[in-house]
Length: 328
Image (cartoon, rainbow, N blue to C red; front, side):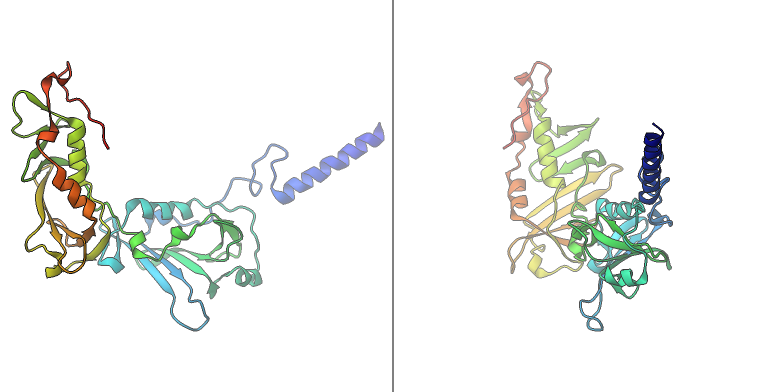
């Protein structure tokens, strides 16, 4: 019996030792590194107003590092390399949150030799992300080799510990078009008072659409009106063409024109031109300096809109509401 107790005691001591070494919660304590998980970055990178993503030149001493900068101007993120075009708020927030939320698990390694081996050394890395506020760098993270699918070795500047974190190629894209806000020309219905086209005018009243000048025996089909609004005010563009007009854009004689009046009375003029040299169409609005290219199907859908399609007979339903039509 005494021998059995001795054996069990030894087993228990081994388990306690393993828990201390591996950080395993074998005795009901906290996991991770034996206590509350610590964040990789001590700085508050949500205060950053500039983010620089870099990729090291492939050959030592040859070529220059590729980089992309995101900059906050008046509280709004922009892509300076695309004439300061607005950056996608969701994309930038996702990047900041990803690095702000990385927790320190058990390090892969902690030596200078390992930093070079895993490509996270100060002068020997595969990528680098720097979060800055003004002229001050809040945090710099070195991005290294990939230990497995969708993971990269990383090291925060000033620390020797190297960790493996979930980072995917698109998280650190150097392509400006991956960061621009393709919904920059869209509006939410509740931002708008009315939409004026050469075929009809849609008024926004108490959260519902009303076709201006509708006959007394007709009501507005809310489903159709929503579709019309999204067609006119939900345009997702293809590429930013620039800030200067070009005769090739065809805006001297626009293919389509319409207006959107925002709450408060501010009008926004939409003009769409057919390109005279290249295929496709160009969109320009009065509230932005940019010219953007859009797909032909956008024009086709706008041209299909018709006032009669937005109306339904009051007798369609007992409550006088329009009967929703199936969308194809």
